[in-house]
Length: 339
Image (cartoon, rainbow, N blue to C red; front, side, top):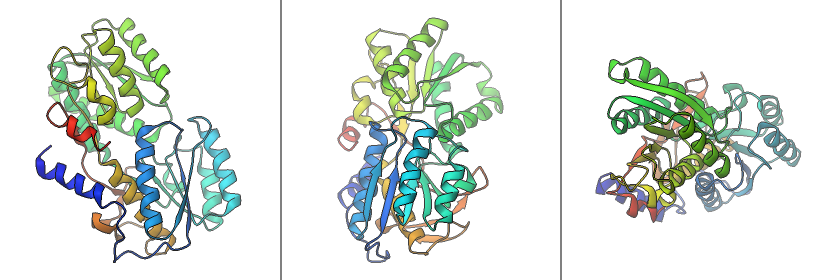
């Protein structure tokens, strides 16, 4: 990551709460933000940014977590929220399709529905705020696997839940990329394991992968909970298997390095404060009828600038924040101070 990019993120963090003069007010508006589960550091950072942004524009945010990282638990949360009639619900979905009936009920009741991080299907939302394009994430991760394995050998995926829309989309993109280019032909994807975004289960799944595949070269964990758990297990046990994926710099600091002492040479993520902030402005714009979520509509997201709504892979619409960022031994100490 170059110095200009680091500086830009630092500046964005410092002015996160600033009120944009071109943004319509959210004065008196009530927005509910629904997470996948409690204790997910990634979501909590984005949620804090979302809340701060809405409050700076005069609105209020109720951040709600389901009891477990399941669709059924989120349905219970949504049922309660609909009875409270907020102006909008923004959700990181635990399942692509299972939330549809409840989210359609919310929209029928006049509640605006947006999503970020993990999208429900296109009929369950008005717009999705995507942290990075699906193919861009898949390409970055697939090339990391190619690089770290040396271009050949066994590798595995440690995902979150089997129903997580974002995880499945990234994994599918990786498979398509791998199958479509001869340079990946010597790589063997042996298994996609699921840690359900629980640290202990992710640790157990890491141990199981190593036992089942003693020649495993790389685990790719496109989940902040999974990668942190796997990093610790691999490093504590002196495993020759290496790791990459999507993680928080602050959680991966002691595990990141291009040597045998560290389990993860490098990994990726994005500007989480920016994701929360962009999602807040998109939701406010829905509430104020400045956008409907239709393709090619534009809106201004404060100091982040102007964004255009584009077509998502599932046929719905999305707003893409930007490209994934690589964190390595050269920049992780500085970035760990941010998140």
